Length: 84
Image 1 (cartoon, rainbow, N blue to C red):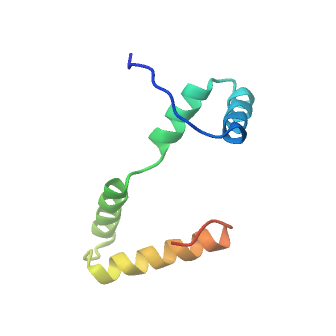
Image 2: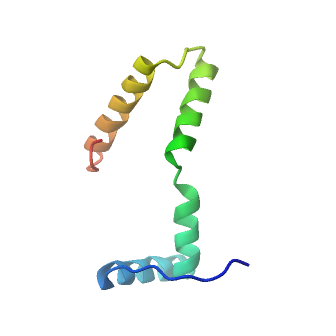
């Protein structure tokens, strides 16, 4: 088991995390672990993009990378998220 630590956040965020955890029948710690493990790092996203391009028979070039980033930015914008 890993050593516990603390994270500073606002009361509003803490309360939201508590509510989300309660709704899922878990703890804030377990909720944060789940959220952190679900999110990919930049290098993990890049590796998956390379693998996807290979599966599609596409050479993963800077142009393909930019087109992919532009596409995801448009998707996020339509979902109400921040466009990159």
